[in-house]
Length: 161
Image (cartoon, rainbow, N blue to C red):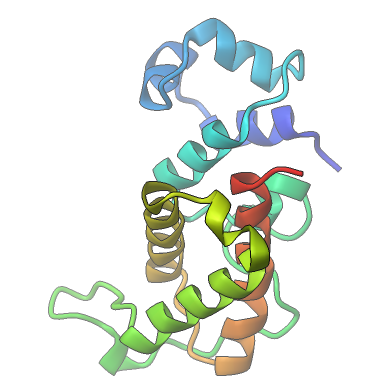
């Protein structure tokens, strides 16, 4: 299994550190330290990665388990229903999906909800919204299972032990 530095390097791909580091609000040297495993990346940096790369699976980023992009549940997603596409062919996340995201997020935060300010909560919801806009799930069971795993990973990033 890859370590976090190797996963970060894989996400960056062929983009130079000089161009990539400013997108994440860090110096080139800081990015080198994260990628080489010299310094563990802080949780805020990992959330920036997920914000910049909304197709990255949060569980994979944090643990290395599951696919780099897409889903972590054992069931395959159903094909995208035509009514789920907007006028320009983009995926539209329904109100039901947004409600499910908020419900699971509140459940995973539990008593620690007060430790997250409104800005951080919006960033988490926005990150999840972007992820599910690009990785549409039509099956309710698959959607819930996958969301629980990914939201749990994001909560661990937002609220380290």
